Image (cartoon, rainbow, N blue to C red; front, side, top):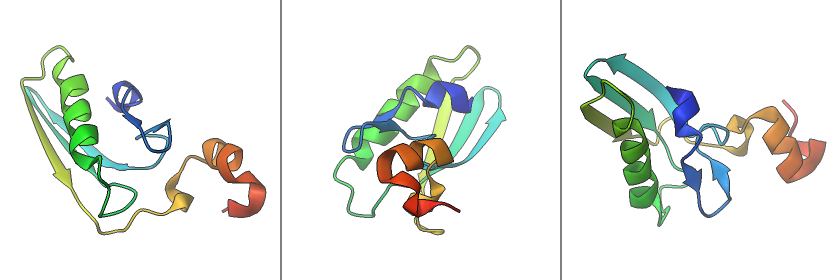
Length: 97
């Protein structure tokens, strides 16, 4: 399920929401899927765009009829949540775990 969410790109940084670490949880109970995600900042002007795109991508998956998206702020997102290889490409090695 997370693999299809890699098509959802955060337009401000040009990286998908999975690699950015914005997807906190996915629960599949057909025909429903529940997605818990965050944004890079609570003031993200594109949060509606990102969540609508995630909903559209998930609705294309066979068997899914209902998508519930919950945007949360705790725990807060940080650059350390970005996949390691992506983070190193973005920032260099200074953000190693």
